[in-house]
Image (cartoon, rainbow, N blue to C red; front, top):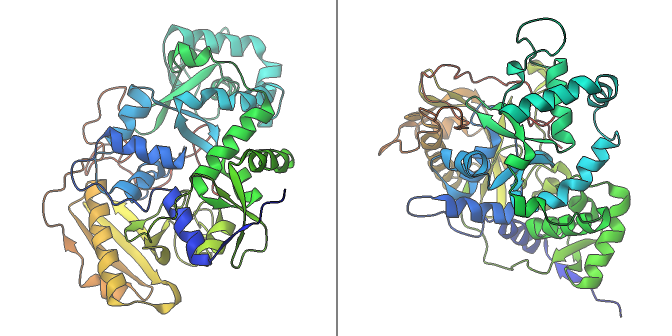
Amino acid sequence: MTTRPVRLSASAARRLALAAQGFADPRPRGRVDRRHLRRAMGYMQLIQLDSIPVVARTQYLVLHARLGPHDPDLLDRIAYRHDEWMETWAHEASLVPVTDEPLYRWSRARAEAGETWGSLVRVAREHPDYVDEVLAQVAERPLAAGELTDPRPRAGEWWGSRSLGSLALDWLFRTGRVGIRRRPGFVKEFDLLERIVPAEIRALPTPDEDEAHRRLLDRAGSALGVATVQDLADYHRLPRRRVPARVAELVEEGRLLPAEVEGWERPAFVHVDAARRRRPRGRALLSPFDPVVWNRDRARRLFGFDYRIEIYTPAAQRRHGYYVLPFLLGDRLVARVDLKTDRGAGVLRVLGAWSENGAADGELVEALAAELADLARFVGVPRWEVTGRRGDLTGPLRSRAGDLTGPVRSRAGVQPVPLRSRAGVQPVGSPGAASGPTGGAPGSGGGAT
């Protein structure tokens, strides 16, 4: 029996999508704790990682968007001290619940068979004894790439950057022998995966690839609310050739419901758990790597929002700026802001700000000013100001900028705990508080769709 598709207006699809990401819930009024972060992860299913700290690293920004100002060290405690979340390759380098570890074994098996970066495969095939020695060193103690002792007949500790040692560690990560924790400054610290993933999870049976994909697609459907086959595949970067068959199985099981969305050319699917909640009324500045906007085609379909990240675009050719955050107000993306945290000066700088469709009304300006103040608190600076002139919102925002009222409660990584602190935003005046990008590597984050 053929099921009639669910028919959704464009606005209903937006509400479903935002509710699925947690934006129908109001931000906590009181102190944010680990329960709130776990709930946010429950909506998103994964958090993409990136090393660029121009405002704050993306993993912290996506949580701020949903929870408002809080201590970023909460994420570090959950992921890197209590090992409730783990780094793996999902939607690029990501944090996922450690309980989902079995669902990513298929990816590690493919990497073992050579389906990963060629440089990693060459290291494994041309230097197998060295890779074994690197693994033995990690077994002795957790370490960073620069702490590897060269096992060949020469003295010193000199492996680092994209050296042979770093490549060997990334191979071991991609194939599941080691996992990653983070030191201050987002430095990777490698440890045996068995010391990160609890024994009871490692003992779980390994699902075959089709079953793992089916379960990941079910999670993607829950996180997206309404989606095309392409959207579902993109969420965990699954091999697209095999996705339609798995989606059909989820439809047969009643987990996904066929849908038609106003303005969408391709068939869509609504997840069975998607809630038709009230229209989201909140506000949020979104990281370029937030699940709401990381799929640029989907952002265009849902919001009519044409967006690209211009980090790798030469400055003279950028349309909006280096690190531009979309502004969500209610159920629409209504503006975009080029931002930079100047930690030395203690200020969040607005370099440019544009309304969508020239709708720079008072409600938008007031809401954006309030969100900029919240974001400044979160990254640990005492004020925000408009220092650029690009865009129709810089003038109206300029008169509302200034010192924050009330305490800057979020310390955003001030005085990180030695070794185990993973704070992604460095305090004003701290060593290494640079605001430019840092290099990404396999397993370290980076990349946009």
